[in-house]
Image (tube, rainbow, N blue to C red; front, top):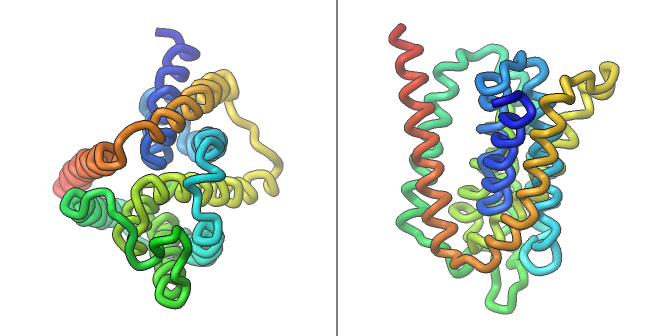
Length: 261
């Protein structure tokens, strides 16, 4: 299989995940670019931000009017920016193997909780009329943004795998609302994370690989986003929880083997 075809195949997977469940793109995009396409990590990280940011933007479009909670997106996203910067600083002083074990533990807890909880019918934040109960929601929204931002900075992933469980578990949002809102936050985070690369002289990436990857991801994310609106929320919730647990298992095994080596 040629590099272009392989890049496009990986893009289809990433775009599908982002469109259907609002996460999984960043954590899979970097390994796909590094191990699948042979790019150095210095190119894979900004390349994944471009791919995931664009695909998330397209996937959010069909949900923008009906499913995105814009106020929560702003609050959680804004709170996460300084925490993400702090997490990025701390990351350089900690062992990546232990960090990934922490990540696996967080994902297991979130996945199990989501399987037990189901899709959610509203909770801390949502009112019966669709409004937001800000008095009891705002503190949790800020704490969620701080926690997700810190973990995102520490673990070096886009945050989708952290955002959806956090929005469902901590804020009590329905899965469909959490998925759509997480896509908006991912777009903001991806754009912000690209600023240092642009300030350092622009994005000089191997576009022969990144281009097909991004085009395929964007092309698939829109129909996947539309399909997600037609699928039962319970199915998406369970599917996402299972996906989280599978990734957690893989990360946990690899990190444990690395520590024992």
